[in-house]
Length: 215
Image 1 (cartoon, rainbow, N blue to C red):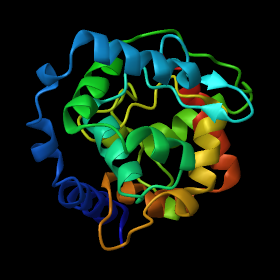
Image 2 (cartoon, rainbow, N blue to C red):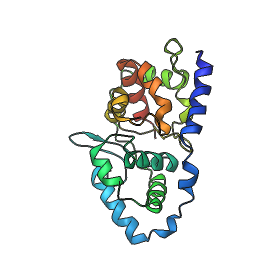
Image 3 (cartoon, helix red, strand yellow):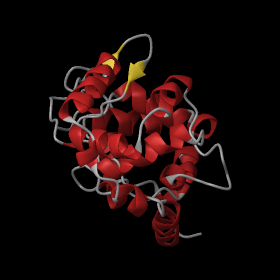
C-alpha cells in the first residue's frame, strides 16, 4: 500500500471506529453539578498533576491538559469496555456516567500549563522531521496529517503537544499490549496500530522528544 493510500485508509478507519462519538456527545454535561465535577477533577489531579500537566512517579502519568474532548471521551469508554488495558483506569472510569465523561473531557480541554519537559535534546530535529514528513520507507505518514501542524489534535485525533516524553515512548512501544483488546469493537486509536508497529525505537524516541517540547 502506498503512503497516500495508507493515510486515506487510516482516516476512513477512524471515522468508522469513532461511530459512537456522536451519541456520547449528546449526553448533557449540565447534569453534573459543579461540586460533583470538582470532586472528580480533584481526584484525577492526584495522578495527572494539579493543572493536568502530567506527572512523573513510578510510571509517567499522561498530560490531560488541552486534550481533545472527543479523544478523552473515547479512551475513557475504551477503558470502561476493557478495549484498552489499564487496571487503574478501569477502576476509575467504570463508575463514570455518560454526563460525567462529557464534563471531564470538556474541563481538561481548557487547561494550558507549560510542558514538563525533560527529554534529551539531541534528536529534536529528527523527531520534527518524522512528525512533519513521516517515514515513507516504513509507510508511516506524517504525524501532522492527523494531529495537526501544531500537534494540538482535532476532534477524535489527540493532542500530542507537551505530552510527557517517557509516557509517549511507553505507549508507542507497547501499543498492541494495551490498545485494541477487542478486535471486533475497536476504539478510534486503532488507526495508530500500524504506525506504532512500523516505527523503530529510535524514531519513537525522537518524535516523542520533539513533541514533548511543544506548548
